[in-house]
Length: 284
Image 1 (cartoon, helix red, strand yellow):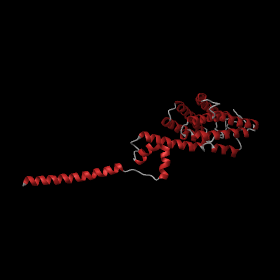
Image 2 (tube, one colour):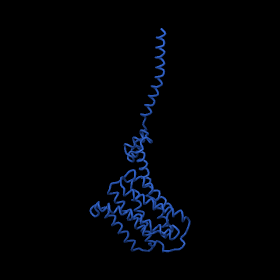
Image 3 (cartoon, helix red, strand yellow):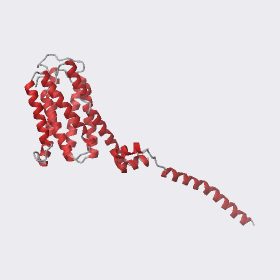
Image 4 (cartoon, helix red, strand yellow):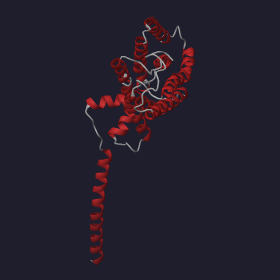
């Protein structure tokens, strides 16, 4: 009789202990199976941005800290489109500054020639490589804005004939770069590799002009710092999304030279040129 009572009590205690454990396991299972479901209006753009796999891992399964590869990819995509957005307006203040002052003093024509053609080569290369727009989209806007600034420098320098030649020449060159027949893939790769020193050399005249005048002239603060931050972030997106050592090297060096311009902007803050060494908008 005593043994039977003990057995019954033991069974009851086992059931009493097991029940909460079972309920706890069921709750844990429900939590682990719970997914975040977004409306189609939000889901489709997110999938288009980071892909089905990373969308499922990061958003539906809430695996933000468990899937580091997808997290890096999502951050890279976000930064990429942020850079593209910034690139679409980065030199608008510079254009407004020139128009409002009626002068392009302090801006290096040589720098803008080099930078515009460098951007055009980079833009054509990325289009032809089929790279994601988020990895180079700002180049399209920078090419257009640099082209406009170059023409404004010539306009305010009263070099109308050179302005016309520059406009026609640039359009012809870009058309040639976009053609597989006129510029084969091998030549395009060589030209892109050449944009690395070309991009760097485009910064040198502006850096020298700033140093010579002890002033940044009409150089836009917003443009300089936006350019620096964008090129720095582009290093991360290139490392994450592309396996292209040439693009990575170019972005690292561009960020370095843009950093020098940013430092000059701080060092010469509020200073006007000690002497006028060239007419407004005149080439170096």
